[in-house]
Image (tube, rainbow, N blue to C red; front, side):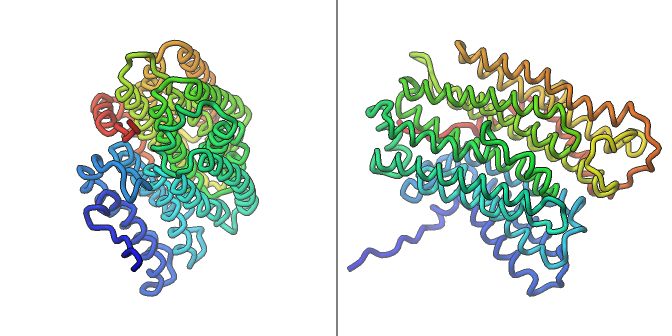
Length: 507
C-alpha cells in the first residue's frame, strides 16, 4: 500500500493565506474576459481586489503566521520577518497597479490586460515565496517564479521603443545567473546531502571553507545578486528600466530588489547562525557582501551623474540604494558574548524599515515621471524645465521624493538611512568603513538629484502647462505626504519593524 497523499489542513495553510489569495486572483484575472468586455479595466480592478484581499488575509493571519516556524516539511518558513515583507510587497504592488492605470494603462492594447496582470501577480507570488523559502529547491522555484514573468513584463508593451530589447537583455542575463545559481545549489546539495537550509547551516561549521562550499555560496550570491542588481551583475538594470513601461520599471525597482535582499538575508543569517556567527566562512561571506554593497552603492551613484533620461537616472539610483541595503546584510559577524538573536533582529529591522520607506520614495518618483511622460511624451530631464510653473503639484511631489532618496530631513529617507548606518556602527570594527561609504555616497548622490530639482525649479521654459488626472496626482501627493509622516512618526515605525523583525534561525 502506498502512502496517502499529503493534504494540508486549514491551520497549515492559514499562515500562507496571502499566497493563496494571489493564486485565486491570477485565476480570476484570466477568466474575467469571459464575463466582461475586452476592456482592460475590469481585469485591473480584479487584480486590485485580489491584492487587497491578499493583504487583508495576511493581516488577519499574522498572529498565527508570525509563530509558525517551518512548514510543509521545512520547505517554507513563516515568521514575523516574512509577514512584514509580504505586507510591504502587497502594498507596493497595489500602488503599482493604480499608478499603471494613471500613466501607461490607456496605451495598453485592448485585450492584453488579463495576460499583463496575471504575469504581474505571478511575479508577486514568487517574490512573496522568496521571503519564506527555507529549502534550496524552494529557493530556486521561488526565484524563477519571480523572474520568468518579469522577463515577459519587461517587453510586454509592444509599441514601446526598446521594450523587446530590454526583455531580451533581461532574459540573457537572467538565464546566465540562474544557471550559475543552480550550479551553486547543486554543489551545496552534493556536499551536505540535503536541500533543507537548517541542516546545511549546522554542517557548514563542521566542514570549513572547502572548494565545493565556496563554489556553492558563490553561485547562490550570483543568482541573488542578479535580482538585487548588485555590481558586477547590474548591467541589465538601466537598459531594462529604460526600455520597459514605467509601471513595470517601478515594480522591478522595489519588488525584485527587495525580494532578493530578503531572501539573501534569510539565507546568510541561517548560515551564520549555524556556524555561531563566527569562523572563517562567516567572516569571508560578510566581507564579500560588504565589499559588494560598497562597490554597488558607489557605481550606482557615479553612473547616475551623466544620465539625462529620468528612468535611467532612477535605475542607477535604485542600484545605489540596493548597495546601501547590502551593506546592512553584510553584518554577520558577532563578537564573543553578543546576543546573536538581538543582533540579527537589528539587521532585519534596518532592512525592513529601509524597504518600507523606499517603497514610497520610488513609487512617488516613478509616478510623477510616468504622469509627465503621458502628458509630454518625453523622459528627458531637460524637458522638465519650468515644471514648478507648468504643474506645481508634480514638481513638489518629485522634489519630496528625490530629497528623501538623498536622505535629507524632514523626510523618512533620512531616518531609514541613518538607522542603517547606526546598526553598522554598533557592529564596530571595519563596519565603520561601510558607514563612511554610505555617508560619502549620500553626499555624492545629492548632485544628480539636485540636477533634476534645478531643471524643475530654476530653469525657465515656454512649454505649456502639464495637465494630469486627479487619481495620478493624488497618488503622487499621498507618497510625498507619507514620506513626511513617516519621519514625524519614525519612532512608531521603529517599533513596528522591530516587532516584526524576528527570524526563525537554526539553533
